[in-house]
Image (cartoon, rainbow, N blue to C red; front, side):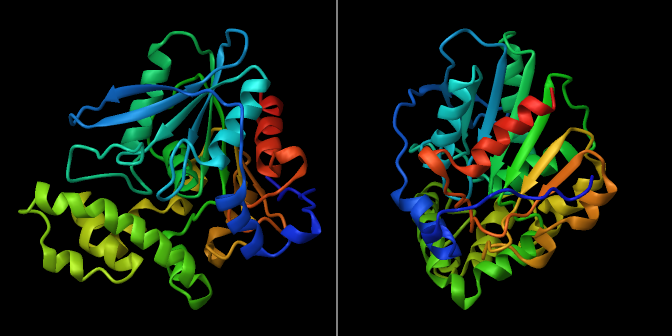
Length: 320
C-alpha cells in the first residue's frame, strides 16, 4: 500500500523523543480498567498469565494486546488501549509474556522477540471460548515485532483474525540493538539490562547446568544478554542468529492480514531498516505510518488517549 500520511500533532512539550518516551513510560497513569487474570498452561508445561478486561455488554470481538521488552499487561500503553477498546464494545486479552506477570516462569527458557508459538497458544485459547467471531492483535515494541512475524510466517491463520497493529516495531532486531547500544540510549539500555539480569538471577540456582555465575558476570550489554541467555535458552547459535531469524522485516512480504505499522521517525530505538517503506509499497496488506514525532511508544495526545490507540481503533473498524 502507499505510505500513509500521519495526522499526529503532539503537544509542544512532547515533540522531543526523550521527553515523550520517558513521560509515557514513567508518568502516564490510566485508571478505570478492571482486569481479571487467567492462567493458561502451555504445551511445554510452562504458563502464561492473561489479564482480561471486558466491554460493558457481551461482545463477539476481542483484541489481544502484546507488551514490550520487560513490560507487562499493567503498563499504561496496554491499559490505555484496553480502556479505549472496552469503551468501544471490544473485549481485551492482555498477554503477560513468560516471567512478566510478577511470577517467575517455570522453565529455563523465557520470552523473546520471535516466540510466536506462545502467541499461537493464546490465539487458540481465545478462540476455544467460542465467543469471538472477530479477533485483532496489537503489539507494542517487542510485541509489535512478534505479531508481524506471526502473521507473516508460513502458517494457516484463523479466519477470525481480521487485522493487526504494530507500534514502535523493531523490525530489524540487529539494527535496533545497535541503536539501543548507542551513547544516546545508554540510560534506556542500562535500565533494560538491569531488569533482565535481575530476572535471570534465580535461574542460576534453578538451572546450574544451563548457566553459571561466570556466564552471568560476563553480561555487560544487552547483546551480551542475548548471547549468553536468550540465544542459548531458545535454540539460537548466538545473538546475531537470534536477531536474524526473529526479525519481522523478512516476513512482511508474506502478510495477508490487514496490518498497520506505526513507527515514529524520531524513535531513537529504531534503525533505518525498521522503517519498511519498500515492503509496505509492495504488499497491499501492509499499511505504514511514520509520524514525525512520537518517540518510542510516546504518542501523547488529548484526554490521555494516545494517538496510536485511536489509530488502532480506527484501523480495526475500517478493516471490518
